[in-house]
Amino acid sequence: MTTQKTVIPITELEQSAFCQTEGNLRTKTLEEEFRAGVRWQKVPARYLKLSVAELDRGIAEARSALGGTTIVLGHHYQREDIIKYADFRGDSYKLSKMAAQTRDARVIVFCGVHFMAETADILAGSGQTVILPNMAAGCSMADMARTDDAEDCWADLASVLGGVAGEIIPVTYMNSTAAIKALCGRNGGLVCTSSNAAEAFKWAFARGKRILFLPDQHLGRNTGFKMGIPLDEMVLWSPFRPMGGLAPDQIRKAKVILWQGHCSVHTRFTVEQIRMAREQYPGVKVLVHPECTLDVIKAADLNGSTEFIAKTIGAAPPGSIWAIGTEINLVNRLAHEYPDRKIFCLDPIVCPCATMYRIHPAYLLWVLEGLMTGLVINRVHVSEPTRGQALLALERMLEVGG
Ligand code: SF4
Image (cartoon, rainbow, N blue to C red):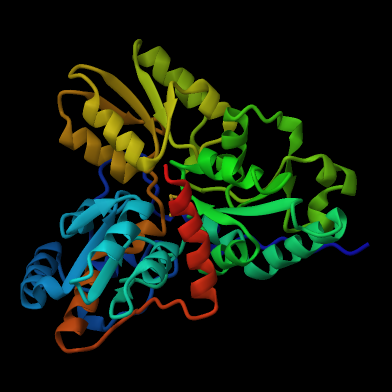
């Protein structure tokens, strides 16, 4: 019997690089931040020592010189010293749609992570260029579904089920590479977000008996659970074991086959943290992201996408108390924007997403100054046939709405 080697993505190993036990996250010079034990993209030496004030001036000058030809998109999880330059802010889906709708801008600088820039490029117009300021800003969850492993899985499932037509539909979370989206597109499947996962499941079940859900096991399990699918009909596919570690009968009986991936940020939240928050703040409402584990979802009061979290807090009454289970930069921003509400992160350790955090203002200045001289640095481009197949899966997602 052969066993595959377990490959843990580097992005997962690097996740705790910026964790702090106390204090605010404060932007330092890039040279100082380089000391964190993660991979950074190399930049010309002059950007290493620039202070936050110098970077601020430089970015403002570059923005004004470039005018409306360039837009900057900022994901909710970006640090404050990046989000303040964003023309639009939102979650990955909202930002990609904005990128597609903003046809006047020739260049889209996406301050987020790699799969988001890929999605923006797929949805963008033919004359538009998408830039990711730091190419080392990946996503550990997306890295957990490698293309060849997913292709092997699909072939294995076809062999057990006697073909895939009417038997299984691949559904991928937005947080996946363009290659995984393309796999779904060419095999009759679609993309979903954390807002429309249930609609995507219904769409898929209308076309097949079961779903292969990639790459986040928790969003998949939480969605299935919410829809009433018994837990023993949702099985876990390990990319590190032959046939996913499953017996043929388990696969045939399953309604949902969950890829063994997770978000390194959202799996930090625990039921014990919720218990402590309730003990310390009677009346607290616990609001978490659906990338958290099922036990956390069950123990929380509410769960939903980043946009849902932001909207819920925005609509909350003054004096209300909120413990939030999502990325710390968004939690801190909400606490700052709504000082009449008590808002805090469920996790007492300040631990940002280590890949989002790699978009340092020095990288933003670097790519903007490049554009001022006519140089495109860090273009993210998805070529055919991946682009067309991934677009198909994204268009099916738009069809289901949500
Ligand atoms: S928060 Fe999680 S899913 Fe989002 S970019 Fe970071 S690692 Fe990926």
